[in-house]
Length: 177
Ligand SMILES: Cc1cc2nc3c(=O)[nH]c(=O)nc-3n(C[C@H](O)[C@H](O)[C@H](O)COP(=O)(O)O)c2cc1C
View 1 (cartoon, rainbow, N blue to C red):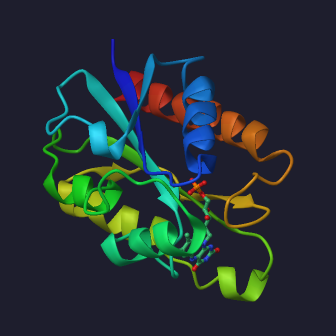
View 2: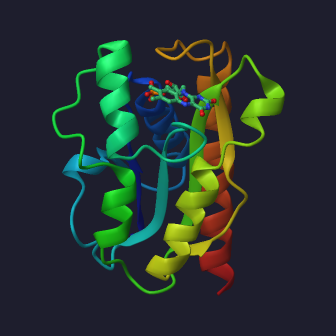
């Protein structure tokens, strides 16, 4: 049976919570694994039919070594290796051609105009495209109250529902194709 894999990066735990909630939603239709990008496999086997990726917005984009270092210095984050995360994993991983995929991000909720400029999930989608994946649904955004969280009330439930809808979409496409 086709499996789903959710690969995330998370500094303060919010994107991790969202990743697990998405996997719970997915698992109503598909077995789903959740793994941090720093520990994710270098190659996805043919049994993985859906790849979901996501992480926080850092300085209007995906986390990178400089923003991870800022998270350590300004917010006391505990990051084992600031050189490794979702961006670096997506650039190196090998995946089945045409694998279905979707992206999400987490972002602050305080400045709606500013947060519209955030493009972590857009970059995730570009990297998925370079990998040869097929993005099957628009990316989803989940809000945190402050830099270190928590998630805005209701975001975990919304992530679960998004995962469930995504799995139904992928299951119906694989039945009809
Ligand atoms: C260095 C740094 C830069 C950030 N830049 C942005 C930003 O540009 N836009 C935004 O909405 N949130 C920004 N944030 C807040 C993060 O999006 C928030 O910490 C993250 O979504 C929480 O997810 P996590 O708990 O999985 O790390 C930034 C946080 C850090 C540490």
